[in-house]
Image (cartoon, rainbow, N blue to C red; front, top):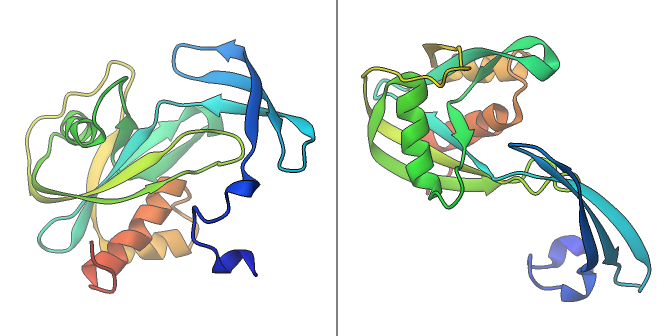
Amino acid sequence: MRILDLEPDQNPQLAETKIDSRSVYQGSFLQVEKDTVKLPDGKLVTREYIKHPGAVVILPLFDDGSVLMERQFRYPLNQVFIEFPAGKIDPNEDSLVCAKRELKEETGYTASEWQFVCTIHNAIAYADEHLDIYLARGLVAGDAKLDEEEFLETFTVPLSELLDWVKAGKVTDVKTVIGAFWLDKLVNQEWNL
């Protein structure tokens, strides 16, 4: 049987079992854990990974088909990025509550319609982070309330132009690339929620 023929939960004998765990680094936002795990064949290996509380990504869609975007500088890569609004989920916070909060804080907009799109994991071998993606419609402008250390610019762009930017490599943020392709399929009714 090919692996592609399997349902996601159909092969439990592939599971690794945690034997031991220790913290390697404890930051205010991220942690690094080092686990000893038992492989399906009985061998022991070490898995080092980043623990992350998770985040949300918002696909803000206007009635005319344009999307609300952000432009901001990202320190680790020392460059400006074009992104969808997004933010970190606070401890014990519902992801939809987080999405509504982040859209309002970062852009000033609220939305009257929210739909869960999907959950993605961006670095499954190196982090436990998950990103919940939401579609936001019925956008109404208001005042943004950025965090103290946050500086960004908001703008609108037609979805077709955003897709051209993705194809040309001008948009490289993983959540934005995935979100743009999802949004294109939803707007063109190729995929339904």
